[in-house]
Each structure stands twice: as C-alpha cells, then as structure tokens.
Length: 370
Image 1 (tube, rainbow, N blue to C red):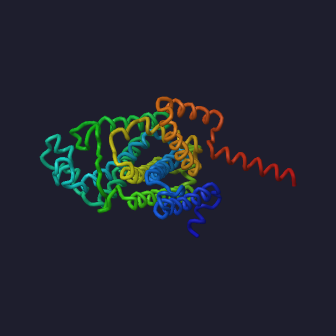
Image 2 (image 1 turned 90 degrees about the vertical axis):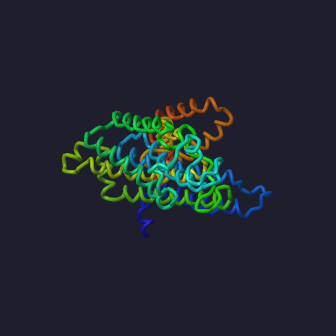
Image 3 (image 1 turned 180 degrees about the vertical axis):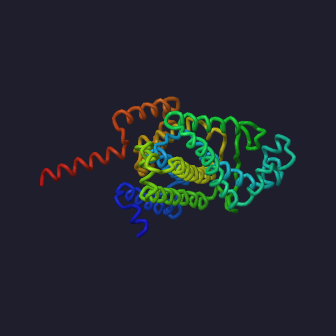
C-alpha cells in the first residue's frame, strides 16, 4: 500500500518498475538456468553491462531530483559517483591481501611500487565492508552538505552554481591524479579479486551485483518519488519555480536546497559503489567534467522532472554509446552532442514528454469521437 501510494499518478514510474522487476527475474533465469549452448542463454558479460547501465540509471535519477525538481543544474555529480566508487574500490583493494603482484598483505601494489612504508590513516577501516559502505554514503553526502551550505547560503544560483560544481569535480580530478594522494594516481584502483569472500569472476557474484543494482535503482526511485510527493517536495518545486517568492513567505530556502542536494549526492555515491565491482576499476577519469555533463544529457534526453525519463535516458544513451563507440569510436561524442541539441530544440520535455504528448493527443481524439 505504501508503494502504491508513492506511485499514485505516476504511470511512467509504474511501468518502469514493472519492467525492472521483470528484468531482475528474467536475466538470472536466462544466465544461470539456460544452458550456454542455447540461443536463449544470456552471457555473463551482458549481465555485467546491464548492471552498469542500472547504476548509471540510479545516478541519473539522483541528478533529476536536483535538476528537474529543485532547479539546480549540477555539473559535478560525477564527483559524488566517483567518491562512492573509490570507497568501494578501497575495500576491494584491501581484500586482495597477499595475492597482489608484490605479495604484500598490508599495502596495495601501487603503494609498494611507490615505496610507501605503511598504510595511510585514511585507508584504515576499509578492510571492513560495512565501513566502506558507510563511507560510500557519508563522504559524498558530507562533501555535498559542505559545498551546498556554503553555496546556497551565499545565494549562488543559475549558471554560476553550475560552473562551481564543474570546478569542484575538476579540482578532485586533479587531486586524485597525484600519486601522493594515496589513491593510485593515474592508474586508480584495480585488479580486484573478491567481495565478501566471493570471487568477482563468478557468475553468481556478478548476477548478485546485477540484482543489487536493480534493487538500488528501485529503492532510489521510490525514495525520490516519496520526497516529491511529500510537503517537502511541494516546497522544493516552489523553490524551483519561484525561489524569491518562496523565501518571502518564510521558508529557509537554503536549508531545503542543502537537504535535497545531500540526498542526491548520497544516491550518486551508492551508484558509484555498485558500479566499481562490476567494471573492475575506478580511476580519476570518473571525475572528468565530461562525465558529469553526460549525466545531464541523459536526463535531458529522457525527460527532466519525470524520474522514469531519467532512467530511460541513461539506459538508451549508454546503450547507444556501447554500440556506436564500437562502430564509430571517434564520432560518438559528436553524435551525442548533436542528439542533445536536437532534443533541446524539438523535445524540450525529452522522450518522456513525447510519450505524454501522444497520450494527450489520443485522449483528445477519443473525447472528440465520443
């Protein structure tokens, strides 16, 4: 009943979650139960690819929450995603133990290579899974809270805020590239072996990560819908549409902005933590400003302020990226830019808006026929 109430008047979200539930049942069956020789068998690499798409979809939902409903165009959410990924990567590196190239049970390989003598203080505790997951939530959340508190109290808005968020992720990119930071420098963290004692190369482990990614997406979607449907959500939309008027009637606008921005960053951190064990690497490239811009493009193409549109955009664009980077690797970035321009000009509400237009047109035709 609780979920039904949250999804009330959200036909798109109901369909999206129903399809997601079907996929979460069908994919394990096709991968684990159907023999490999059958044409119905789904290979494990495809499961991993779908799992990666689901983490991107969760990231897109997080961005849609702050952009679509709060009106903050964040060009730095890739940073929160990467911080969550690094928290998981540090845990996975600690699980390697003495199975690394240098056989040092205490230090990761890159630290041995760089002649580090002991584990840095900020790596302490990452041999425990619960601590790493806590950090995947807290570190992006704390950064978003501090950044948002400073920016929103100073009433930085619009394009200036977007530029600052872009500068934030670029600063982190430069910092994480440095070897002395203790995060693997340019190479990042990789060569992961297992998680909670289960091999990352096992089909069962990869399937579990896929299912967890789907459940995290569903949970993140429902959380965002709950926020939007609440009184808080109505205030958030009011801030987007008329910030000065909302402040004038007595609401502390900056508090609402900080709260939603922090929740969004924590969702991005969860997405990053699920992404890393599936792709097997995390490096400073994830902080690239281009990545954060791509996330915004996913949301714009899918449909801003719809949530399910963000999921649709993230999956479709990344599927197209997978296909076209194989066929035309040098042309993909131009195709993505052209697609963004076309959607902005002719589909300002994205693909979700196009579906809503067709539904409204059909409804009017039925009314006219009656």
